[in-house]
Amino acid sequence: MKLVVQRVTEASVTVDQKITGQIGKGFLVLIGVGEKDTEEIADKYIRKLLNLRIFEDENGKTNLSLKDVGGELLLVSQFTLYANCSKGNRPSFIEAGAPEKAETLYNYIITECRKQVPVVETGIFGAEMKVSLVNDGPFTILLDEHLFA
Image (cartoon, one colour):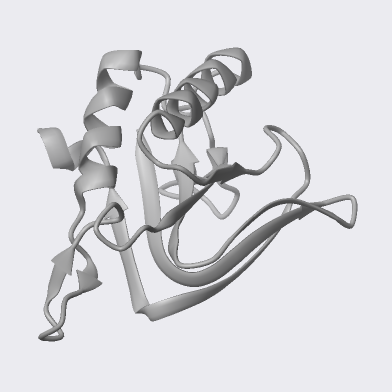
């Protein structure tokens, strides 16, 4: 699994010129599901994501979590996080999870996050999406398989 977590002041995703998800202060999270991923692996990423302390406290230190600041989530599936560009110039996506598996785990992540975060917005799995954001900082973190190795 790979998550790209961007701290934002606002973000939205549009499909067919209609906004499907929009948040204010919080995290825009691009989610890539790999072939070997499971719900147990997803649970580890969810815990890490929701407890990341990357919002500034009163002293300007990155010490507050999403919950601490009443932040929101925008979750967007993005299989291209599994692009392998090691051979040639055309990416291979062989390590990405099959669409059925990826969609199931993406929906699982949404459901679990909604149990803990009041505002969880989403893109549409498999759709051609336009993502807009104002990255705050900028602050971007990659959570990938090295995290739990």
